[in-house]
Amino acid sequence: MFINLLRYSLRQCFQSLFRNLGLSLAAAGVIAVTLLVLGSFLLVAVNTDRLVQQMGSEVEIGVFLEEDASSQEVENHLNQLAGVQDFSFISREEALEMMAEDLRDEDLLQDIEGEHNPLPDAFRVQAREAEEVPHLAAQLEEIPGVEEANYGGELLEGVLRITRWINVALLGGGILLAAAAVFLILTTVRLSLLYRSEEISIMKYLGASNWFVRLPFLLEGMIIGWSGTLVAVILLALGYYYLASSAEQIEMLFAWQPATDPAVLYPVWLGLLAAGTIIGGLGSLWSLRKFLKV
Amino acid sequence: MPALSGVEMNIEQGDFVFLVGDSGAGKTSLIRLLFREVMPTSGKVYYHGRDTSRFRPKELLRYRRNIGVVFQDFRLLSRKTVFENVAFTLEVMGRSREEINQKVPRVLEQVGLSQYSRVYPSRLSGGEQQRVGIARAIVKDPLLILADEPTGNVDPNNARQIMEMFKEINQSGTTLVVATHAWELVEEMSQRVVSLKDGRVVNDSKMRGALHVY
Image (cartoon, rainbow over all chains, first blue to last red; front, side, top):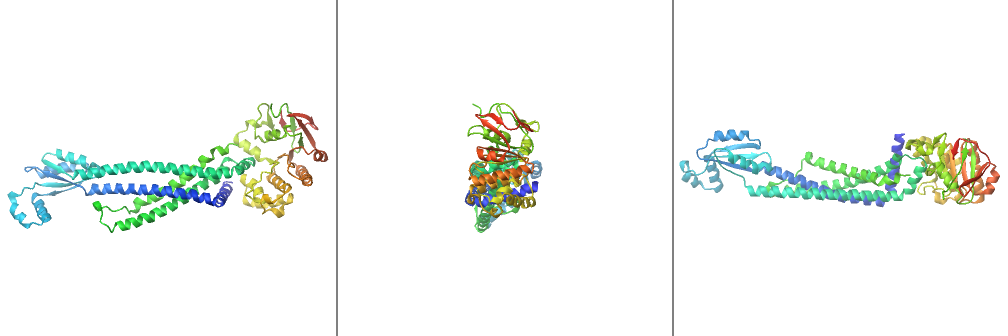
């Protein structure tokens, strides 16, 4: 019985899709465009998140020690701080060598070597999360024997603030677009229902159950939603991988590279497909409510 | 003013009942009550002792599946072929493809439309369309057929054929309730006749039965 119903519903749904091909394509197209934009938002969000993660792992806090401080004691403190991912010790001698190398000034080494070396001992500390850096720096300055903890603060804070705004804007835009997509499916299915209202009233006369009336429309909405989203996902993936591969050849700010990891991207593609299909199905069911009161 | 008042009648399994009367006499209202398309504002319709207005959705579904309806305006689906229109009844009831492919041609043959099975209804005459309507009603082997002015849009020759068809269907045990104002045909058929006037029963040629309307 259920198999018969399913078989009948599938046949009905494809018949209706092809008989109203123009409308079906228009609806699928609208969903494709909507989800294309929605998907782009999602990709921007994935990448800003990745950028922040990257910056977090790259931003180092320079912890400079007081002259008579014991590096061992400071190290013990660092081991206890939860926000610390990793750290390394740089003695004042090493620091001087690095500076000379950076400045390409061999003479400098000879001039201020040994007791003349003005540089302090230091630790380079990496934070677990980029967002934690300002807070962690403040904590580090509390450690006895630490003179100063420094992290190029303004730049990081600026980036964090911008990504926070971007995420809020994307979330808002995404919700609006999803609502628009639902509304459009609703309208499409309602049009197709009006077109078939005679059929539905006859169905009820012949003794059709509510699910018998609903199922073809439900499938129709889901197929429209799914196929529209599929087009969007294919276009989005092609465009994104193209951009990502050309970005690899360009040196970018913060050495940023777009996310190409399947573990990050596959959930985006599959999530979009599921969302499109569910939106299509729900739109159908919603439009059907008042047609079933016979 | 109510469409019907003081109507009291019994219809028994196997009856063939004509509801006659002028337009507005209440024939259609009575048919709609019997199908439970509308509910009475007062009074009851009983089916085998059960008050139809108290049917649960599943019972109503089962009740309607035992009833074939024939409309004056045919109500065929214009986007389906003759075969598909008749098959639709069985599809609605969740019957298998095999059963449909076996039953529909047999019923189309019974109403003399085998050659039109792939044709769309708009290509058929009124009489032919009504025969599709009858095929659609009988294909599910209903216990009861309700027909509302089935010959209203059909020429006299076809009308007579349709009535003969009803007679055959009735002889196989199906109960028929036919609303019509085609007096001559009713007289020729010599079946039970219930006359309605201004929503009241003014004459019933025979009173007995299992379907009660009070």
